[in-house]
View 1 (cartoon, rainbow, N blue to C red):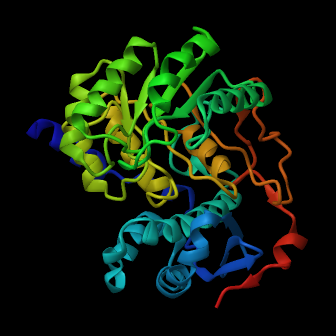
View 2: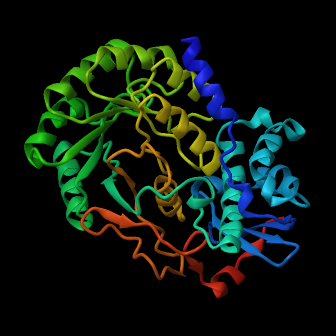
Length: 386
């Protein structure tokens, strides 16, 4: 075990961000959080006139914006953007920000990190992903995520059938249990639905099940055996996400791969999960976990021990665009990756990709930075959050 920790610590000590691409300082002159009708855009400017934008996790930023504008964004003003990797560590402890570790801190940090990567990528003529890794794949095979908890099995199956028709995805994820130990609704839905998934959609489709922490260990194992017996390919969050020993116990008891990490905010906890084989598949969320650089460190830890990475992506905004850039450069990308679509109320142009699922595949943009151009008139309508 100590040998595994030593390997992981060497990985964590290695820089991820490619600072060598930028020979001269890139001083951050301003950081703004802009808002319009529930949409939050971070705009970063350098003293040399370079600009970068990101669209935040809007669903969460509507309550987190005070942390962003008061505690996170001001820290980066006056700093050299080339020190981004070090700045992510420093903002964590600045002003006791570490006490906010979780979505409260890491979503604001991820939002500004992505805006800085967009700015630096445009300066270097590289995509956001290429600032932290080598491009391994530009064609991302997606799985269609859905959430039909609270609906009957029949309604759920019909909804899944429709989304598969729309996207052409070759994999699907369905929900089981009641979420974080809540009672299931309608009762008995899980045990009725599991055998019908494979029977309904055939042998060719990859099928994933997500319990969102619905069970204790004995019940998680019982449900896991049912999944195995019906040919389901992945079991996500069988027990509550912060039950580390219990997650490992479930993974050890089952043949079906156990995935998790969506809610995990701690690098050290991911280190434990990898060292102790607590998961089979890593699913860090690049917003919830603080961005590309921190997310890449988790992927590299998993890669050292043969663990695939299938990052979770929170919905709204440009979430899955960022996911695609991230997946394109990690060395241990899983076979399929989460697709939730892109916000239809964001006007932008992307000359190198439709950013739609075409026969179950999305193409990663090849342009610099994010690879898209937000409509300047739309951005100008936003007001700075004070």
